[in-house]
Amino acid sequence: MRIIKETTLALALTLSGCASFTQDQVAPVDLSALAAHVQQKNVYVRFEFGVGPLALIPKRVPQGNDRFQAQIKRTLEASGLFGRVSFDQADYKPGDYFLAITATMLSPESSSEIWMTLLSALTYTLIPAKTTDRYRMELVVVDPRGENLSSRSNEDGVDTWMGIWFLPMVGNTDNKAVQDTFDRQLQDLLRQSVSVLPAK
Image (cartoon, rainbow, N blue to C red):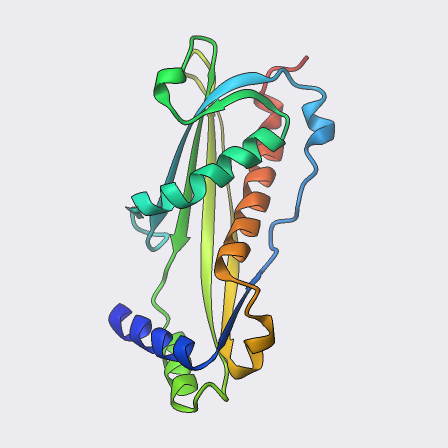
């Protein structure tokens, strides 16, 4: 089933324009006001990216770690909530907090998406097709004593449309849409978790 989906998707992409749009289910958050009231503790961060159905343990994808880790670090640093942000365990010092961040692309097999993509390809993309990728992000905050202080999660998605009608919007790439989605998801999780951080 996945091979058919990937083959028809590749065929559609070669014949058409492709544009991705965020679903914006998670609203953007301004963390500057909250950052003014917390101590900027140093944090050691572990980020993992995976793919799989929600009901199963996702398959970890190291390439996803490489793709998104720098972005995750920028979002954490820009939040103003922390001091040093490091993904290197060698930098971990007593008194540092630990953040475990997991992002999972939920990929249920949708037969309707497969058939619509095939139909679009057969009509030379005159009939547009849409695929949807949903992303679940989880943030766990652990204090220097090893106590789990907070565990929060949220979900959002990216719609990708294929068809000749979307040629003027090819600048709306999947990479941009996913980056925007991850930024908003992580900011929202930080907002939910800020109450467990030490106050000034």
